[in-house]
Picture (spheres, rainbow, N blue to C red):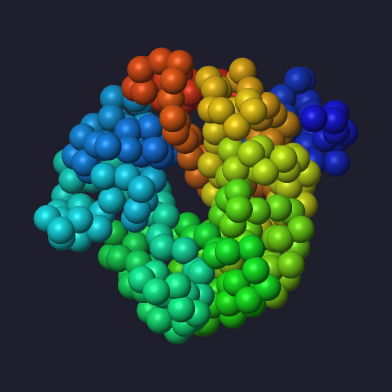
Length: 285
């Protein structure tokens, strides 16, 4: 990555990186994604998170066994599990806003929005005021449906924020994609900056963060090299400069540590070391 002049983002005093004058110390909050233990049901996943030293967890509607959408779980049972293990829910990744029906792939934005809205109300019932969401295929109609659909959701559910996530092969993959979408959306539409997917798509993570500093709502941290996840600090993710940009923008959201496809250590130890790595960087901000 090219070296950037970060003086326009931060003020440096005595070797410490400070926020803008009068803004106070920026406090970003760490959370753990259950991608580190995808086959663990909710109780075991929450135990994993606490043993790795985290106080917050991010869940997924799909992809992991710890989904709160479980035939044997009620909303109250999910709440009870979180309370019993002393873990706060920091976020929930819900169904994608594709504009299409999942069973037939028929274009039907209204049907898709009903499903997405159901997930949003589940998140609200679990105490969240934001959800993570992705788009559909890389087609012009999916772009139109994403913009219209986000607008309709934000108008219908007034007390929720949408974190639009980037993903390789998704309608939202690159800086250019977000340039096409964000100006059309209410400020309650934020960005989920997924560092792993940006690296996999060949995107400049720092340029992305600099482009949308005030719109970033949550950050997923995953270090990798050549599409392969690696221990934090050994791959291509420029952790320090990225955190400096977020600090200068007074970002106080969640930094979610993702440990997908761990091959270099036991998942628990890998998650613990990743937390310690990021905590050390934050202590110097």
